[in-house]
Length: 169
Image (cartoon, rainbow, N blue to C red; front, top):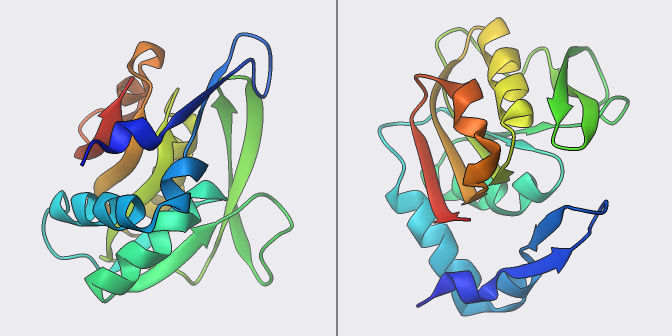
């Protein structure tokens, strides 16, 4: 199945000059979404204790990945969205800056963590998420993405990390 045909490009969204990769057509097709999940799972290297996914599109495949890997799921969210004690990390985006938070008690020392998000763009979101996990004592064993925007060189912020991607643009 050619899953890339289920990715819609939306020009000038959310700002002029950005070519947004919309995964909603993929989500609308049950067979395509199931195939994407299978391919993400095939790329997982080694045992995983937790899956961490970033708000909000990362949740769409992050939770099913955790379920299939029989491990815990941890949401990383924007400030003020998680109850309880959180750890914060600021980062730069392709078109601005932001802050992410994780529950302080979500990761235990030595947890083997798979990080998932929909798109690897500049790498800022992924690098910030890895920093949060590592500050809490976890080991990022792999990063998983549906899409990589290669021209933005996000991998350069993730040096030494094992990265699995379904589609490159």
